[in-house]
Image 1 (cartoon, helix red, strand yellow):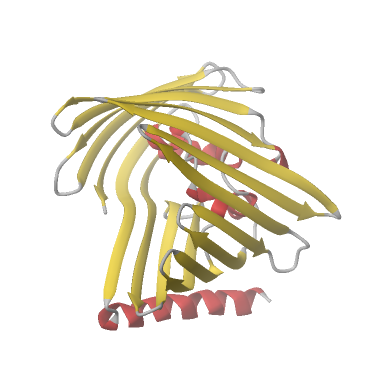
Image 2 (tube, rainbow, N blue to C red):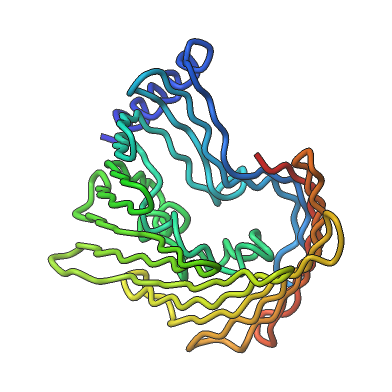
Length: 285
């Protein structure tokens, strides 16, 4: 079964490569960086990506993307898509609806450290890829404007993951929400999260809550804020609290050039897991 599924992934990747030169439209969304992180229990270089590349012609298209670092801790996406106006259907290995909204503050401040607690804020499908061997979710996703639903299965298991996520915008406010039902071992468990953010002049501030019971993760809340200091220069700060850990605090300094180039330096830590320092150079698509 897995040989077949991996062959399908390779085939979808080939579809994307073949479609790109002949497609009427191509697009890239996300970012890619090269960095180094140092802490008491984690010291490594990394290549981190969170992006989607797409090519389309008429109603049909193909997409490929990733979330995580090159190596063990990453999820790769590939799908054939059909779109008509605001309606879009993706089939293959699409990004779960749950992961498209309410991205955690820790992922914004120090994405490499956030991978160590991936189950706290991400889909059961994504957490399984990161923590279990031979775990390859496949399925479909449907999007209409700012609402996405998805359905994933996992070969050789009884796991089914159904998710919904959306975004509402009111003037300077933005509300992200997501809900996920996970069927496994004849039982259904739930993941849920919500995040509210507001833009006020040079400031962007937000609060998020993550209740990923289906992932056996502790209830977690975050407060984060970003302020523009000067042209191209900003600072982001984070405070995170969960049921099972000490409070975590972090901050990131970002230089973002008009060309898309990024330079970032971040620090984050708590009493239980110590302090991490990370630096990276990247590109925003």
